[in-house]
Image (cartoon, rainbow, N blue to C red; front, top):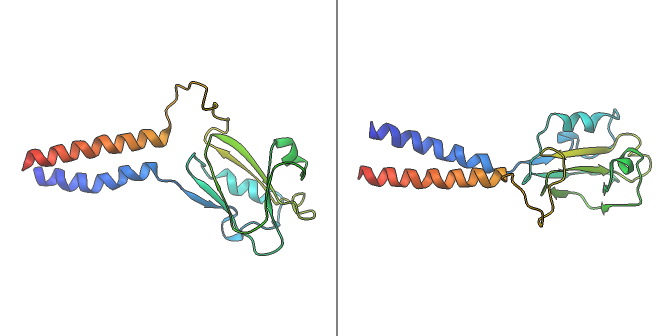
Length: 163
């Protein structure tokens, strides 16, 4: 019976650690960051993704493009190019560090109006409280890490008790 448990735990531990793993998303997958064939392409691309704190998104392009992280939905909807953080060299990696909704557009010519823009909803999409604000919610990746640590300690204790 003891050997079965050891085998089970050896298989289980790597799976538990993967709960805290971050995902790197390439915006547009194989198409990359380009003027899409239909204006809803990037909305459709993002709709089946679950973006979490700790993940990252990567913008890749080969033609003349850039990526501007605009500051509001209104600027995104209107393709406003005057505010935000502009990145002009591919690839661009954005680390997702807080629950929020992020808006990205291309500012080259009419690219944004043609659909080269994407909304990224991180977590529940609502901005996290500022660090000075108290919060009762646990960070999911910290919870997974804590669970892994506790289980690892339990396995070590269990294995030592068999010796």
